View 1: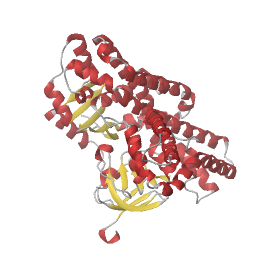
View 2: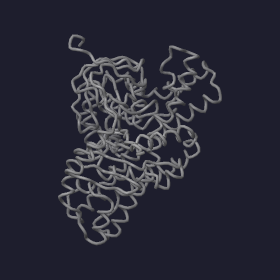
View 3: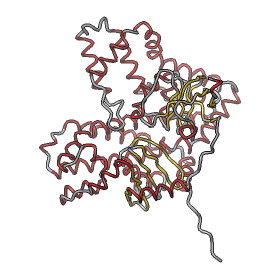
View 4: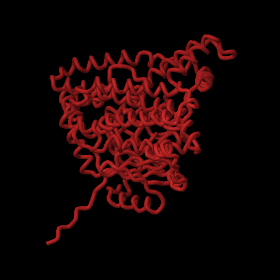
Length: 493
């Protein structure tokens, strides 16, 4: 008797603007043949696909493999406590290497020296990528922990819906709030802007040197002195209105610590609950560090990629469309990648990972692979008018939806509702203008949750389907306290 073959079921992991090299290295960091992921959890993602159209990349894997990884992380949440210091050391070493790339004399390097730097870049990116993936999966895999915390708090104070999110925040200022706070203080201390005092100019120069990398995710412009000077001129005209915001930014950390202490005194947590809180705070801190290192990697590697483009004889934008094997083949044997294939990758490609090996498909083969993946992925029902997610920052708002997968999509007005797969550092200026924030991914530890609480903007995370159900221009009502988004009809607007 013939057994029916079990059909694969794929699950979408993420949707981002990523170049091909980043997508390639993500699979390299997540597959079960990677020694780091084997050492840490003993499992990885063997079957892996990336569908990329003009840089918008959707990552898929077999649901059973993703569930198996989540189960291991959920069963061993202390992995982040046990390895926390080594993770931080790795991020610090990666940060130092990426920053060193900005001071190299690239035209003077031999082809082998240039290739060696490129290979170290890929190796470090892969190594930290393993940790990034484990942190990324925490929103789903550690849900039982966050549920235990929420249930404990509900027994103590049923109406305090945001206590869990407050306790999960690391008791320190995020780098993004630090940038905002320090810049606001520069604005408030400026006596005039025409002319701009030399002392303020020096402060802006130091500020740009420290925070130039913040908006970088791929090819965005860094924040230089000209950027901050322009921002100062805009904000200077609203100086009186900014006094309260500046005061709130300066007192955020002390207020957070006080609020956390008050909650702990009221709930009298058990040792188990204290461990959960510490685990969540540690993970949130690690996730912030990895975002900082990622942005710096993308900024400080630009001169390296520019020189590789010169040597290969292609545009700078085409280098991240090459695989590491194609770059190595050029420097070792002068073999150039297929120009037609590279051109196709700009528009549409599918990356397939299997047993640690990677294939890149374009044209008809890419379309065939995409059809197969989507046919075996869960479909979102039509006609959904109510979306549920997790409270990240309480509050209510009503406004028009703007769906952004990255700053490249940005057409955004003050008071719009930001809907995205997950926020990134380059979206923080847009987040500040949002009436509310909604994400597909994430939990109480994610970037959107932390930044929205620092900004005091209603936020719902982990909806899974918001970017698929909602469309640009839809009017929605957001009740973040209850974790509910309601689509409104024309008569409700």
